[in-house]
Length: 543
Image 1 (cartoon, helix red, strand yellow):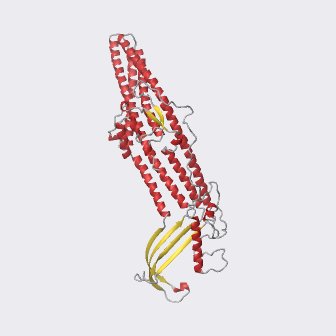
Image 2 (tube, rainbow, N blue to C red):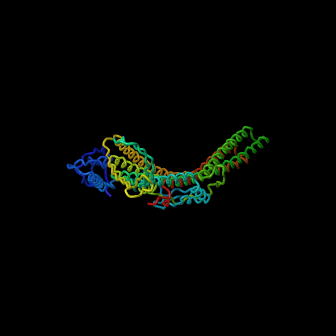
Image 3 (spheres, rainbow, N blue to C red):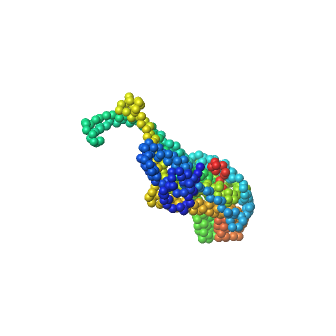
């Protein structure tokens, strides 16, 4: 198939006189689309360079001969440049300095060391690496019931149907059948004849064929654009799967963190209430002042005030999980996730930047939009070229239904019409608009790639630094818990004041809550890394 190539920077295409009707198809593709004086070609159109009188039948034959020659030379020619996939970026690292291949370990739950393995295959159901059967079941349910996925899937089917519709309307001739009956009155005076008016019936039956011969490849480019948009919807569906699984995993871990913090705060409130009771007893026997009781009560109530906040966040997270799974918020049945339900993946995959751009669905979606914009530009260029429409009609006309298919009732027609735009500034503006749309799509693609690299870089740093943070918090938690136990013993023996106990409790409370958040964050970092790398290979579309 010959391909017309025109640079994006080309301007208007001015029609010029053709040297003759024998212009080759290859030359017509490589030069301007001018076809000479055969604009709006039909049976009655004279051949401009003929010097002798041509009989009517010969003129009809000549017109269709020229049309056939042009069609054979230009058919299959595609205006505009062919799409070239963007080259992979010459980037070898996500971060300016090396990321630790193995994280530090912490002496606590979810404190295991993790190792980054370049080229490690990503599992299709990567969330199973978190080791929670309840999470696996909830995500599997969501993949079947989520309205978000149903909407994305319907959009994909719509794009594929639009492609099939346009393909059927442009790649094949359109065949129609017709039947007609009419009653007419004829006045001979309209033809300069004498006589009375006549009334008669006229019946007809015909089959017609219409076809637009894609000389400049406008239809071909339009189909290419629709196919690219169908690919875009496909990648959007893949991205929706990935996002849904990631959001559910993140919400499940968040629910586990909030449950842990709620339990820790409840235990602290219980201990503080016990201290208040003991303080009242000490005041009764004269071993403590009322001010100490007030201080303990204030601290206990401040801690108690945090419980409704944590409970609200936990309930809202459960509502989110229900909706993500395709349930109503009040349906219930959401697993009561705790941090003990999860395990930290010992190995995490790492994809090099050159492979990431061919793997992440959002990057592939941006590339599909770039492809569509390139094809749209080709359509705008093709609109500057001649348009050739062919039609044929065969049928029968008679004054009675009995004679409809009898001898002498047959009729037929053949029409070929070649139209070349001569002056239409709107077409040039459409071409400039299509070029601007292509530039916008190219800039969007570059932005998506850069943002993808940033997300991976941020996550790699998070995996590294959050592991160190958990190590420090685990050490601090052990120290504050030991200090709190020591102060509690001293208070019971009368060797320490309640003020010292309050300070020790506040430190232990803050450290424990922060450590629970750090444990949950390590799980979330693993989830986000799987998302940033584009999920598993099995979710990628067939090539």
